Image 1: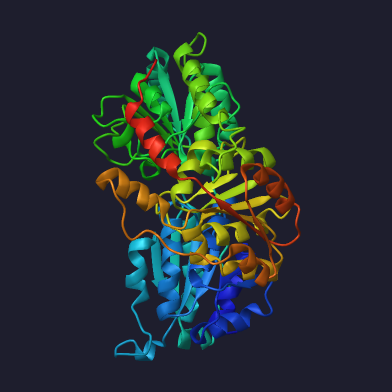
Image 2 (image 1 turned 180 degrees about the horizontal axis):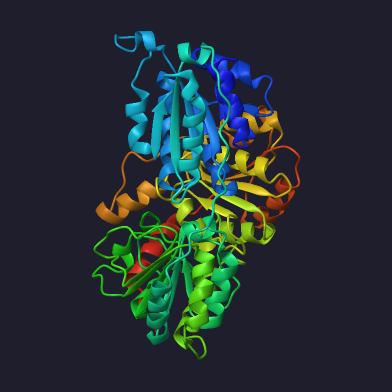
Length: 545
């Protein structure tokens, strides 16, 4: 047995089902070891796509997704997806090939110090320099990657070490035991909640990672406290719940801003500051905060918690609920705010403008997607509309790259989502800019049999940047480009392509596309004049509560 074979045995022991990556000269020992493994190696068309697939796999399963590259440019291509997973708290293990240890001290073809390079974008990383250390390195990598807060780790394997004889066996995986919050902090939080007149719950992705949806919904319901979720906290409480105030996280003021203006207490549950800066909703640090999470609060002048309740989130919420003395009906102002938010959403149901308004695209998409179906959003102007208008009944049914906000995640992410949940409908929502960054992974999707729909918001430019330029300078520059015929491009790759030519086309095309057994692409012209209308509306917003 050589080191590469021992590495693969250790990966099997960790429950790895897939490795996403590209073959290279320096990782051939690992690829050879995978030939006789239960792990399926999925050959991608770009290392960035491989890392994004591992990223989304980790988000959906809670188990570290694994990606593999060779050295040099293969490893640097991998970094964007690794950084995305790390900032968005998705468990991921990246493995890179490397030159032999016998030529690291001199200038060498394609050699970079990958341990130093990956250190800023990972929780931990290490190079295998002794074959016998492989089991410890792999076990530590998975343990750290999957521990709260989850993130990316990196293992660097020199080619000569990979080929060396190795002795050893995988290490046993520890059973993770929940950590419970101190009773003193639970009682302190309950007392503050009981005294608040207009508390508001801000729930983030940590509550999804902790599987705390049921406990959070019961907590809010019993205490009559309205709930706003971050982009990455969608579905923690069903959007149909009468206390759900939907998503917060836009840079501009929105209806939900009125709820924060009125709040005399924010109960932050599983909230990470990277999801939505507290300076946007608590700029002066004047609103009292209770921090509930599985890790302590970060330090921020706008996020100084009166009480930190650190421990298992579901247990914490249940224990606070037992001792909190908060009676009465929901705040009527919060109910009014919810109706204003719903009215804004529903007004686009029958809009027949063309190009299609982004609100209408999202509304129609919501109509054809089931409660468990999955939307993967790319990054761009469309992401703002997905965040604002695509509402969820259940956790992990709308995935948005938010901490790192990396363009190009949607298509490879949809591949991973379909692997994890083959019976669910999966839609990758992307702009034409993001589509062209990783559209090559549609060939991967065809090859491995993962049918999903790619819905392109087509405006012939980098719409989000144009929006920002127009807002700041009253004009835009360097954001326009040309596109191929997306329908013909899809068909040339063995996919099915559809073009929306009127607002009325969209709903039937979506239904047809979701029924196909091969990946499909929908080219939908979008009217991004709505971006500027929203900016003006945000500037003119007057809270009625």
